[in-house]
Length: 177
Image (cartoon, rainbow, N blue to C red; front, side, top):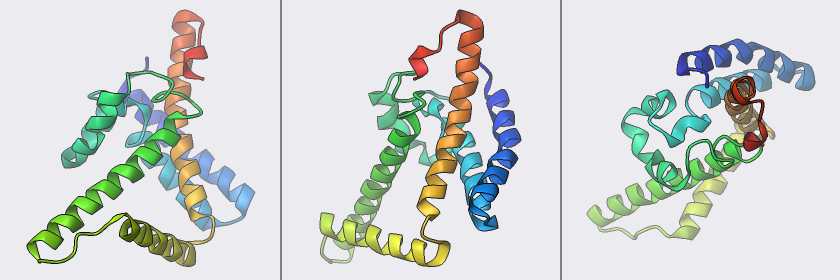
């Protein structure tokens, strides 16, 4: 498999073509910039090697703990981590879930110390709804789609590189699909 340095170089190399493609499709500089930024983030921080002690995992620094359950649950190079179709989708859903749980813990801790009411699930959904409205109003209707596409493409560049390495070594790539 390619080294972390190789994966990083490929991420930076492919960020510009991904931005150019987004611009050609949408005609907007903002959407192109969002796709490119999400692509770089996806390649450097959100890739499939979060299931091991890797460069991507180490970059999370003090927030690495968010990925410990992910590492325990998924085996390395499974279809659910390195899979082209579900890998990035599972990480996005996992990350949003981890953020939600973390936010509930922080809000609950604050409520305990301030003698307030501990937030429930409905409070959490209301907050996410407000975030969604704010983002769509200020960044455009398709912002979340552009972010997801950039994240997916950045992670997919890692998977494609691993697929190429596997194919060169073994002649097989089916495991990644």
